[in-house]
Length: 309
Image 1 (cartoon, helix red, strand yellow):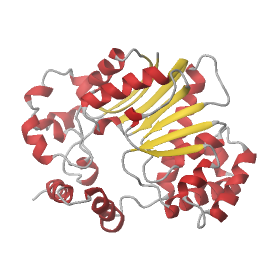
Image 2 (cartoon, one colour; image 1 turned 90 degrees about the vertical axis):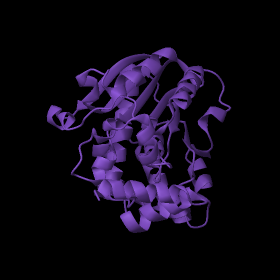
Image 3 (cartoon, one colour; image 1 turned 45 degrees about the vertical axis):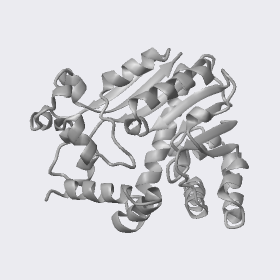
Image 4 (tube, rainbow, N blue to C red; image 1 turned 180 degrees about the vertical axis):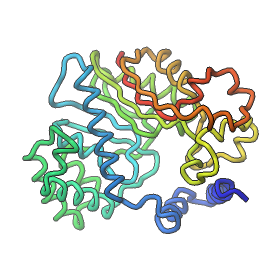
C-alpha cells in the first residue's frame, strides 16, 4: 500500500474518534513529530512575518508604523503575532478554531526570539524589530511558568482568540492589515466567501490583506512517490473518502481564489505564484472537474496574494 494512502487511512480513523483534534495533536507530536519546533520552522515563520510587513509597507495608503492586525490561523507556535508586535504593531488579534497555545509552546517561542535577538540573527531575518520591545521578551520567559499563555500574550498587545472568525465583534474599518499563512486551502468555499466579506467590512480604506495559500497535494510532502498534483485525479465523490477530515483540502485553484476575492470587493495588487513541473502534472490523469482549468493554473503550487479594497 502506498504510504500516502496509509496516512490517509490513519487520519480518517483518528477523525472518527471523540475529541479527534486532541488525538491528532498527540499523533503529530509523538509519532510523526511533524510539529517539532525546529530552527527551520521558526525561521520559516519569521520570513512569513517579514513578507506580510513588506506587503503592507509597499501598498498601504497611508503607511503607518503602528498598526492593528488580524491573523487568521495562529497555529502551534505564535511566531508571527509576536514578530508583528516586535516590529511596531499596536494590537494583533490572532484567531484559531482549535486551541493549540500552551505554556510550553509559548515559552519555546519566546526563548527562540530571545536567543536570536541576543546573537544578532533576529534583526537580520526580521528588519524593523524594536530593540526595546525585544528586550521585554526575556521577562515574559521568566513569567511563562506562572502566567497563563493568553495573559502573557496580552501583555504585549497580542490577543489569542479561539473561535470562528466570522463571530468577531470588530468595528467596521478598524483593521490595517489582515494576514494568513496556509489557511485558505483548508476551508470550505462558502466559509471562504464569508471570511472575505467580513474582511471587507473591518479593513480600513487603504488597508492591506496578505495571504499565502498552498495549492498542492499535501500528501506529496509525506510520500515522494506522488506528485504535488496527485489529488487532482480524484472526483469529488472519491476525494471525500480520501481527504483528511480534520484539516480537509478544498483543492481550489488560483482562479477560484481570485474570483472569491473579487466578489468580496477586493482587488489583487500583487501576486507571486510558484509553479511546478509540467512533467509532474502530466503523470496525473485529471478528474473531469479539473480539465477545464488552463495548464498554468493547474501548475500553481502556492501563491502570495496581496489585496486591497
